[in-house]
Length: 217
Ligand SMILES: NC(=O)c1ccc[n+]([C@@H]2O[C@H](COP(=O)([O-])OP(=O)(O)OC[C@H]3O[C@@H](n4cnc5c(N)ncnc54)[C@H](OP(=O)(O)O)[C@@H]3O)[C@@H](O)[C@H]2O)c1
Image 1 (tube, protein in one colour):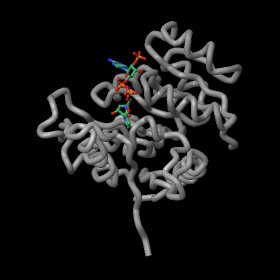
Image 2 (tube, rainbow, N blue to C red):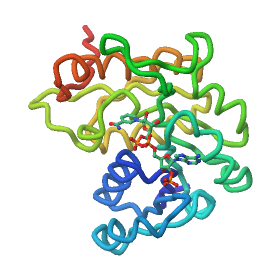
Image 3 (cartoon, rainbow, N blue to C red):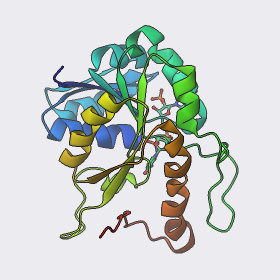
Image 4 (cartoon, rainbow, N blue to C red):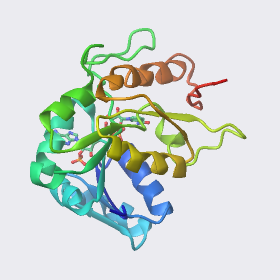
């Protein structure tokens, strides 16, 4: 099926940034929130192909979904989206399992362990959806066609459904990334902590303008 409609579950900076990226690339987008009315200004400025709605409406709308909510509430947001609306859909999971505890010497804390990532928990909780981890290992300012000169940053992805990764890879390329498929959902155990690494220069030195690149021979 051709993917033309994107449901974005999450109305924060990441949800709005990725929604803007999809709109820029010609997709129709519905951004979901518990309070869609607060997105009236965003909708007004985002053009004809932009809509807002509840989590459930956004999930029903999308051929493909993006999950961009606070990690601690990801299960709740998916429950609000509704199992019926998630059925058979690819969900790009941009979340990170950041704990509410403060960082330690610039290292943010996670509520997960290295043996069970957030995405694995979401995949187990919502088996009717196909989660693909992506967009979590870069700051929102660099999520859509970032300019690092001649170098294309790497976007790591992982997920159990090969078809879903086939659907997501061209989107990541369209958004300006070289795609590295790191395998099944367990790989999120390694991809999610890249967020910690990415944030350290920012936390320590207020340096936030970087992206990861996997060098290969
Ligand atoms: N900020 C970045 O640069 C960056 C980069 C990579 C990955 N990430 C990850 O992307 C995700 C989104 O980050 P963000 O900074 O855009 O926003 P955020 O503040 O982490 O999350 C905002 C979203 O969470 C939803 N939410 C909060 N409490 C909820 C609840 N109890 N039930 C359901 N939904 C709830 C909000 O819903 P309402 O719309 O209803 O308020 C809103 O849509 C996070 O997991 C973050 O770690 C962030």
